[in-house]
View (cartoon, rainbow, N blue to C red):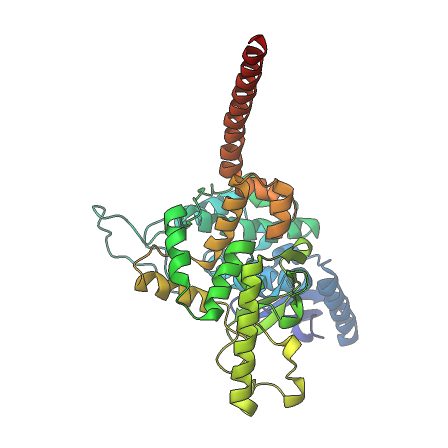
Length: 424
């Protein structure tokens, strides 16, 4: 929301209008200015009121003259805040810092495709992968060694996606006549193979997992057997577990942001809110963990959940994966444990998200239909599953050919054998 603004005499029958528009992605105050010609201060104040109204409605006659930095603040306040999750807003702010440094000074109506092409080219240069607020290194790069300080094509594409979104909304609001990002080819994203354990390493992992603390055994097996996202795992509370039907209700996530800490959030999409079945062996671990948590709770007494009032310490609404004193566990605790586990047992390092890919891989290669896999993973539809795991779908489809060949051969042989026996 724009402030009431101020007026300042700029000459004979000339007044400068200034309206605050909040803060930009870099934390600097945004100010909209306009010079009007009025014969009196009262008339200038009326013009100021109209100027404020135009800013709030997005109908500025001078909107295209906003700089990209000013527009980002305007877009965030009038669009992002009501359409995006807090974590997405924070992420957009972080990558806009680099955009701001390169293009933030440009007027919205002066941004051309060539500016985007130049920006993407700069992002691909060696030495760019560092703090966007820092000066890019000028030291010569040893070309004999592999360059490790460049941004990946996938990361560069993320800058394009944000710019395309920003400028697309500006077009929709009629602040600019067209979207410059439509006129350039999007940086190509490089397909990456998901890093997962093969059958041998999975077996080794499961065997070694037996010696771990119940909490981590449960965390790992739950991720592997259901494909739940890390944020979904840490968002689980005891009220979400149904021991009678061996099912889990996934209806919230646990997120972390610097300065805010750990907080509850909705699921990624509407389809991510789901009810899934869990293997009986994993449900047994839930029971063991719940008993252990109850023992810890009794031992600690008032030291359990010291961050909330005593009357709010209700067992059903407590998180399943917590710290030593019952506080919600940090979602990255899973990463930390996995890293230590891999080093301890000299195993390839994987991430919590790897378990999601492993779950999808095993289900698809086992012949489970895509709609069922999509429901298990919380994808919006089976098209998403097919797109992400297209290589597995193709592999499974090829296996159907071998299965049909075996089916035809087996049944033909049976028929021939039966015919031969009949002749005898």
